[in-house]
Image 1 (cartoon, rainbow, N blue to C red):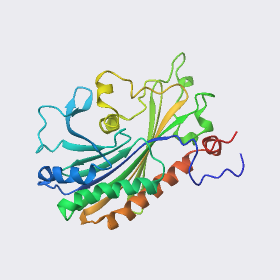
Image 2: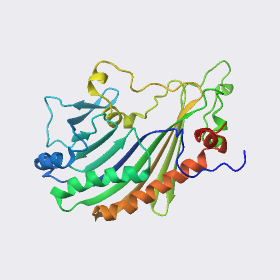
Image 3: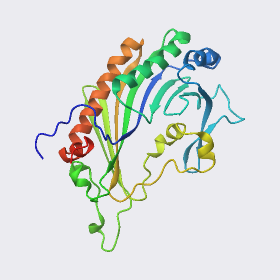
Image 4: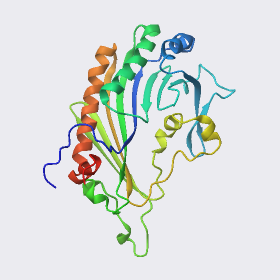
Length: 282
């Protein structure tokens, strides 16, 4: 397929979840600042919850608005969400996380991060950043043909059932880590009918982006992949040497660079046919 433009916004983009995290030296006074931070955020993010994480028998589990919430616990955080929960800001003593199921452009997303960061800075005055990262989760769907090789570089594909007589490949993943001028880019590709569409470590924040009553009632917000589907999980991160004091004007160029690295990886991994399909072309 010739002359496929891999630039610009895709009409049928496979991207369904984006998360960015800024980790910093612990702000021990943060619990006392939450009322002021909530007041700064609530015009755009009116839904407020408290989250506590714990290690359960099947991994990390999140407890929202539980009676045992301890604001001083290192695994406690506060959630500020849009009314439809498509975007959530999660703040803890040592991190600011912004995640969305409704990503349109990086420029728009960066404006949401700025809004949240400024709310924290209005109380903290100074923030010493330790690490910055951004993560993109795409659902690659070749279920019509069942041939993922038409959509991604074959180097990322799993072994199939031909390697085991009479068997079926139900789960496989490939993880590659790159070092690029001091940044780290990780690309994970997972496929198989026993693989969840959202990686386990992303489940706690992802689930908070849905109506909690629906989840409590057993609504199937996270399912398993179908035959011919795969998740492409691209994570770009920067680690400070110790920590760096940053205003948003310092943070924004770092996030922009990490976005560019992840975006370049996505466009290199996915095929011309994939981009033609996602642009809505025949």
